Length: 208
Image (cartoon, rainbow, N blue to C red; front, side, top):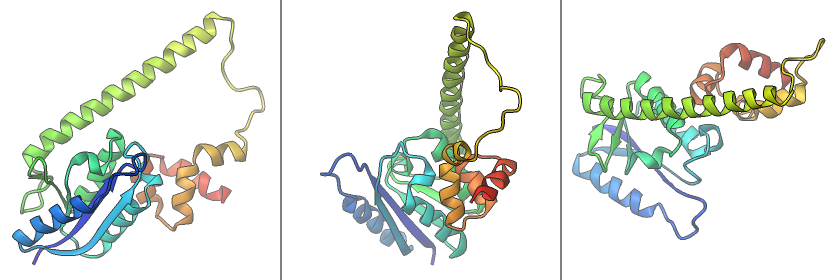
């Protein structure tokens, strides 16, 4: 019997929302397909939050990687998150561990029965990746515009002689990584979740 987990999320900004409908729908789908639901993860948190600030999502990723789970069921891709980059990170982690993500409203899975990338889901992921690329491009253009405006108004850039990044600044900048380090996550998993390089994570780890 196929072992699956259910992941549900509603926004914490709307107190009237409840994830029970999602659980009911996915449990019914699992029973129709003779799946064994081994665990349900549900949380009230904004989908725009980074993965590191979503405890149930992190628990789900850890659980499926170590409990021989074959699939994760979600009602909609937006339940996994509304931050495109963070959603792609989660899908990548699941794919690398040969765990298929079933998206009910699209009725597709990210992996085929032979654990290969599903072409239809790859099309969806390609669109998401393009959206993420456009988001990064927009951010980069804003930064460049601000940089040019700063110089045009007589501003100066670059580190002062003898400058070293203060430890407290590092702790604030990499607070998400520190949370995960304190929870015992490996550097490799933190890199996948936050996108921070292993070299930087090594430096951050020394600050704890």
